Image 1 (cartoon, rainbow, N blue to C red):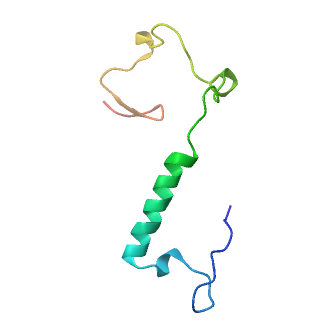
Image 2: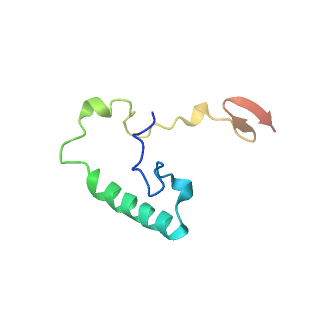
Length: 81
């Protein structure tokens, strides 16, 4: 989704990121970075079990009998010995 249009600049056109100077780009990135860190902090107890039920848990979930040794595999397609 596209966000709202930017403010109107001095020339009567919307401001665009590509039109900013290097200094303005750095200032904008700095403001965005500092806001992202402070504005999106997770609150205590905000992640419940319903949001992490996809995680497999247990003692040693690695199955050594389900491995292929000496071959390179990408997306379960054997590529090379």
